[in-house]
Image (cartoon, rainbow, N blue to C red):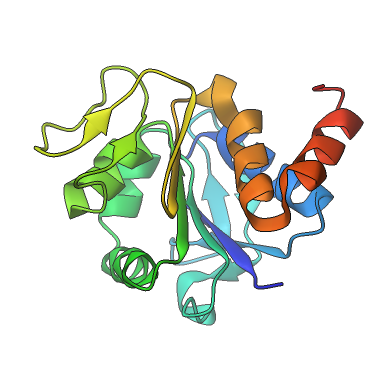
Length: 183
């Protein structure tokens, strides 16, 4: 199976990042955490500092299973400002590769790049980008083609399980959910 990458920037939403990483790894998916900072230490929106597996420039994203963007502020703004990440996201979407974003990141990162044009998506309420052509929903998780979006911290587990289901099937996602006592 291809590797998935979870991108971390100072100000990221800890529960969204860590739940995605944990759930995907429980399912047996290879996941690499990526700092877009100059170093591997990244501090979340609530003061939790984590050490990423790698720096952005250490990886080749051309064969990625998933490119995953946690939300949080100013984490999402920091992700959107990283030119290399924006190029990787555009290339992933262009080849039909899977992209996932939760909380502020669907709006602040994906919509502002035009990656949600003509798609149905969700984001943290009130963060809907003033971008024409995005159909903003109010459910907790939305899947439209190769892009999966979640609305915030309470959607972290369903968001991560949606990625597992798309990569490994619903049975695998249900097995992980059951093991976590979510079913």
